[in-house]
Amino acid sequence: MVFSGHLLNEQTLVRLKYVQPNKNDTTTKRYPFFAQYDVVMMRL
Image 1 (cartoon, rainbow, N blue to C red):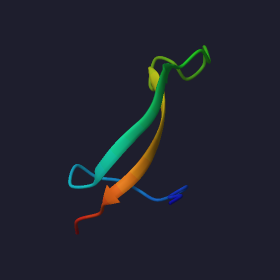
Image 2 (image 1 turned 30 degrees about the vertical axis):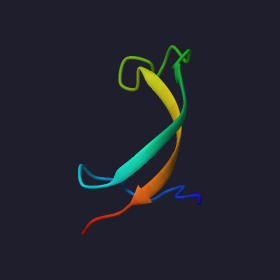
Image 3 (image 1 turned 90 degrees about the vertical axis):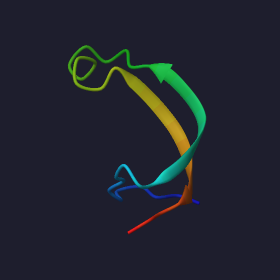
């Protein structure tokens, strides 16, 4: 399942597939990690 561009909130359950530190100097302060994930369940 791909949810590119969808907003996730605190109620969304995800399964992390891969996590790594963000190495982009311009975005690392705001986004310290990069993660690939699968959405398990979206709650409204």
